[in-house]
Image (tube, rainbow, N blue to C red):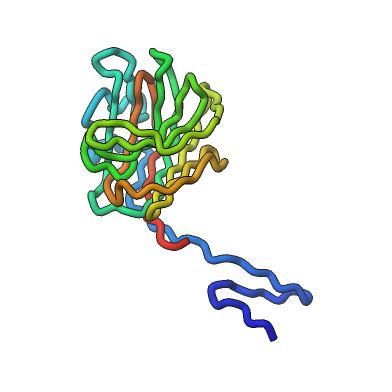
Length: 202
């Protein structure tokens, strides 16, 4: 008789064996719809702030073209970030916006960005103030609509989905832990939901 590995679950149904792989377990670390404001957030560049019930950055001038804000603990390591965002005005053909992960300081962190003009997603590192593209993938968004960005960082595995659709998955070992957040560059961006959940498992 063939032995089914203990890491799989078997179910006999009308003589058919269905196998299901184990799924990752998650626990919420932080969640907000900004109804109570954004007091927990640390704005370390630009214009992020509450406006009409959403957390908004109007990074559309030379002085405020980069806007960045983070929330969480230095000990956060393996987690999934979900942010519901909408793009408003852009003020430059280099406009982009997205999610920050494993933030160390203003010069060291991961950035998961949607490039508006180029219509693509990138995963980048900022190391000692210098940006490096780890991966990129073409992707087109309707700028007039709300979209759910989801970024997962587990060990060396980094991945992005948008509205439930996989965009890309890569490996990189530059940063291992740190808070999460939002970033916009030459863009007016609103966020009305943000959640970070720890991820344990495959």
